[in-house]
Image 1 (cartoon, rainbow, N blue to C red):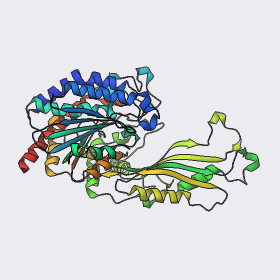
Image 2 (image 1 turned 45 degrees about the horizontal axis):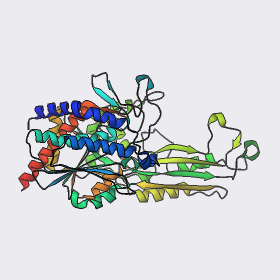
Image 3 (image 1 turned 90 degrees about the vertical axis):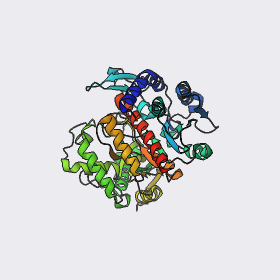
Image 4 (image 1 turned 90 degrees about the horizontal axis):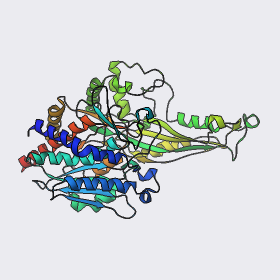
Length: 483
């Protein structure tokens, strides 16, 4: 493999064949079904699928099967079947649905969720702004391009199946159905590649080693049927806010620094030594940018260098609770002098990758609802989603990953868990337990998926595409040697 020629070809193909279509994709408000109840009649999801389908048909060789599968009651998927020089199968995954708009886009720079715009950063690198480009509309284009890059050099690869869903941002509710429905066509992949994850920086290849699970739900405290004058009722009627604070204290300590362990023991697990060592490598490479990348409202924390590994582990293996929504509390401008009848909070509790989510949910629900007040009603209603812990990489794949990073970034590859929850990873692992997994992505510092000013770091996406091409080539060599 001539890696110089391959990267040159990938760069040119991105510039000439991908970016224009990726901009068209960003301009379509294809919000996931959880955020658009009328997603089918609005048609945006089908528009992005059609856009991707047409692009694939235009650029895939004639012997490649390109098909949209749209079953009533399900979100559609795009499926590509690419014959190879071996019957072994590589499954490549991505998604086209998007998170909602979110407020805070930088209007002064002309940025908006559905307004694709390329801006050159301080280092001279191009960034493509807009919702969904990095998370992860680029994946279908990068996946097919990686295969095409090999074919341009007449380099062998295994059979590849590219599966692009449209429900990932809603928790992939239809993915298990499609994996079963298409099991004969997908086969039993011995390698799964997913481009929907993060990167610690834009200087080397990053692999995701774990994902946290999630307990999410609404905690509600009711004390009255209606609000009453606070001067009349306070002292007799309990404050629903005080009760809800007390409930939260049962699972989260407010003592100590946020970076220290502050969640209940039942939400914690023992962290594998391998992941501790990888976290140390990641912390040494990323350094203080690990926390300085956030837009702190006051002063940035002052963390000692020897504490950075703990910070990585707190983000990837430690439980943490966020209050993401509030009910029963009026805006300050509308707040009268009233003892409110109820308070409710939307809770997002990240749990360690290996913790059983159903057990965690039951324990959280019990702890939150367990109180002795007979004149207040406390309820927690929600759901749980599993985390994921990557299997150990085979020696050939470990060598391939390191070789790809050195070839295209001139830096060694690193491994780090992600703090978020991606349910489809557990689904794919459960479906294909014998497979090797390459989980990576372009969501590096500042990319801000789900938030305002989301961007795709174009040079990184190009090099990542080249890395995937090399992994596909090395996979073929591995299976050919085994035969």
